[in-house]
Length: 501
Image 1 (cartoon, rainbow, N blue to C red):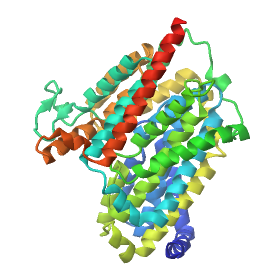
Image 2: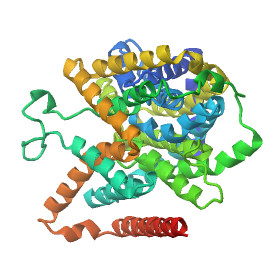
Image 3: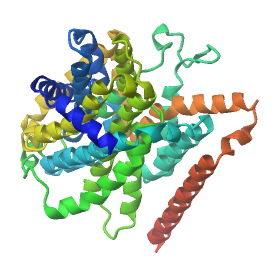
């Protein structure tokens, strides 16, 4: 009851005209930046940081929260319409969301994403308000061994499921892991796969890989089929900007499962919402295989609903972890932690005692941001889908231009543009020969986490590998992985016998 009273006081502060204006501005800015390939909420917060010193801390962080959530909505919009996610957290939404758009269901896909993001973010905000003290206890159970087990689960489970060919899935995973190892080894200081190029000492940026594989690779693929593809996106962009009851009922369980999957990852520092979105997608794909008429690969609404709910529920919990624990579990949260410190504030349990007005107004602004973003995105789903009316030569030329601008804005180096081109060609070849993209991205995103985790675990145990299976959490993760592999092998055997029959 005390938390509810404090939240009401927070709403009184957040609903002042000026703070409400900052919520709306933040949501609009976040959405606008999110639709730019290679840009995202982390860059938006970083660019706004020096511009907000004239604001009082409450207004500044309300603005940041709007940008944070708005960036996820914008990322999803471009991921669905153009197969061009602004950040890695929207990669999983491209797999089925873009297929929905190409099938003439772009407005419904955008509505599914908007509602899923609202549900995930809203439920996460409720949990943060009432259960913030439990966050510290939950996150304390995860150590290096648990992180490695989680990464291994993501590697093997996704690689064996996303592709019809397990060797192709594992090959894509190996390529992603290889890219993640390029650069200077953080422990030994050894150069790895840099070919002596100083520009590669810091590794290959995730932004560059994401934009190259998913956006520029798509541009090359579309260009290669321009003489053979007879479909026209202009004839497929129409549609109603709402969900029918049957579609809503189809998506609702996926929204619920995605939210449940994403919530714990908001307090586990695995790099943000990439892991839960992939896991949510993987769960829905496995469930889809048990249906009489599988829909995945044709624009399955559940394959979009679950990752969207998972991504925003993780983001909401990440903000709670930042406020309650001072624990930044994503790049944007780390930037916001720096912002707190520049204002002379230290997130953690004491922040609730020393600055309750700021904390509870900020928590109240989470709810307001969810409502504002739903109002901005849901009615305009059909308007956003009109982007598909742009003639393909202009549309994909614009995407290629923004790919280059987005990558160059993150580093300011011409070398990264060359890397963008090279990796874009790799993305095109993978599409051309049927290699899945998800394992590559998962290997790139989680490769560093897996490497660091296994090293830390072995260092702490003096090289004893049994530490990797020394806790109940690791047993549970590996047990679940064994079940997943057993079902994958069973399905492969069944398909093999059906072909023979």
